[in-house]
Every structure is written in C-alpha cells, then in structure tokens.
Length: 120
Image (cartoon, rainbow, N blue to C red):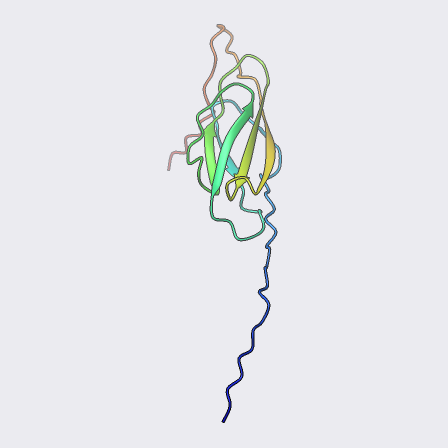
C-alpha cells in the first residue's frame, strides 16, 4: 500500500477586536465611577485604561476590563475623558465622564457625597 503526502496551504485567521469603553456618564462629585469595557468584542487578552483629559484622578484596576475612580470635588462642572486600549493597542475607545459641581453649604463649605441612613 502506497502512502500519499498531502500539503495544505496555511490559513491565517484574523479575529476583529472592537473596543467599547461604555456610554458617557454624568456623575456626582465624590462618587465612585465604573469604567467598563465589558461590551468589547473579540478575544481580549489585556486592557489598559488611561485618562486623556480633565482633572487628574487615580484609576483603580487600570489593567482590568472594569476599572474605577473617585470623581473629584470641584466648584465647577468637570469633563473627564478616559480611553481603553485592548490587546496592546489593537483597538481603542473613549468615554466621557461629566462630574457635576460639588454642592456648597450655606456657610461656604463643600458637602461630601450624599449618604442615606436607614434605621431598622
């Protein structure tokens, strides 16, 4: 019985990566804001969140699909822009976060985040 050797051409498959940094948000000062790339498409091996404009904040978990930061206090409305980069820059997307100005008390001080206490 004779053996036959068959050589097949190599096939290259390219998977599309589509970054999605989520919808723009309007948040209160001092609130924790989630940055989510959960709606991104494709086989994603790494995420990198960076801030591209606005008052500087510290991004927690900046190398994860879902990151977060605390919105800064300000006497004016702020606009912060963040970018997520997937698979070492294969695709990027940005999200804009609008931070509402910090409420001011009658004595001129700023208030912190609203806290609701429930007594049971």
